Structures are given as structure tokens and as C-alpha cells.
Length: 256
Image 1 (cartoon, rainbow, N blue to C red):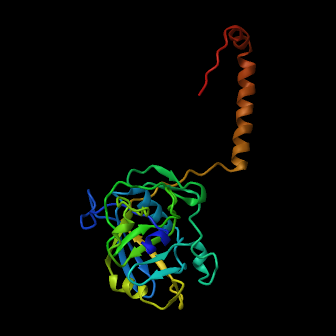
Image 2 (image 1 turned 120 degrees about the vertical axis):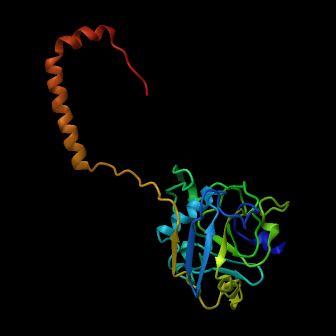
Image 3 (image 1 turned 90 degrees about the vertical axis):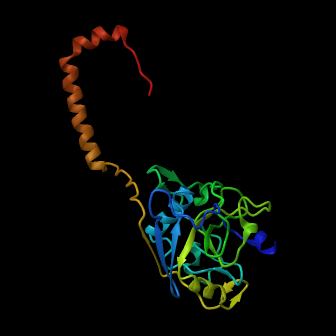
């Protein structure tokens, strides 16, 4: 369809009414012209959901604007350039290419060049009204920070549909769908809201704790440690000079 070919988005599988296996799903409260809440399918599409949750928790989405709104179709946001609602680059930005925690198993994942993540075409959740789907640039594995919220049943966007659009679903609106629908009906010019609609704050609850990156030793402590090691090595060499001479004839090396 015309909308399908123009859309930049992505998402997973048709079990949107079933709860997360093993416990409650993480939930986000999104505050804009009103509040709405969404749950994330962390058990089904852990990389997609974890990346989005990471961006929420670091404040990435706070202050951005909905840059693309189509009545009867969807609302899209998540471009960092949209912090300025009049930026000509709104819709072209992505997430930072840094690591984040896969909240399902605790491992570290890394966004690729351009801040992208790989497509999770594993869960057959359809792009039903109220579903959250990952936007992309029309190519595989190009999802990043931009997402869209469906306000209609857009099955042509499902990754398991026969069409070219492949957008896996990673969450569902649980409260405040009226706010989402209202946003989709605002006045627009070339799909951009005439009156900017800001995402004021996104707050996540119920998500597992992320892995904290290890701190690298400071240069001062590193040089101090190196100095102490050199002194110990020198003493050791003086004490074991005879041993070194003996073992030199049968020395071996190990590769790690």
C-alpha cells in the first residue's frame, strides 16, 4: 500500500493479549498531551524491547516530538533531531551506537553502525491498533530509536505478511489509547503536526536491572599499580637470577 511503502518502522508476533511468561511485563508511562501506558514484550523480542527500555531509562526520548502523524494509520516518534520540531532532519536520526543490556538474559548487546539493532522476526504479533512497532529505513536490520504506534489494524506491516514492509511489534498500549488516537487526528502538513506534540517524559517500571559497565582504572591508579609491579618484578629477578638462567634453555610460551 501507499502507506506501507512510505513507512519507516519495525516489530514482532500475534500474541498481544497474552501476558509475559514468568511474570509481569515491563511497563512505560509516556507523558505528552496526555498520559498513556504501554507494556513491552520482553519475553518475545528481548533485543528490541531492551533497546527501547534502555533509551527510555537514559532519557533519550524526553523532549522529542512526534514528527510523523497520519490519521487512521499511525503516530511516529523517536528521532533525536525532532527535539527541534521544525528541524528539516526530523525523521532521519537514530540511537547512539552503544551497548545495552538484554534484560531477558542479562547479556550485553551492542547497537551496530548508525545505532541499529537486528530484526527479531520471531514472534507473530500483528500491527493491531495500539501496538508499538519498530521503525526502519526499508532495509533489514535498520531499526533503531524510531518507533510508531498503530491506530489501525495495519497487517500489511507485519514481518510475516507477504508484502515488502517488515515491522516486528514489541509492545502494546494498555491505558490511554484515547490519547494516542487524539494525537493521530491533529492538523498536519505533510504528516507533521502543525502544533508540535512533545514527548515530555517516559518512565519505565517493572524492568529487570541492567548490567552496569565496569569502570576502567584511572591513569593515576594504573601508573601507580604499574610502578609497584615493576618494583616487585625487579626484586623477583634479583632473587631468582640463577633460576632464570637454568630455565632459559627450556623456555615455553603460551597463547591466549
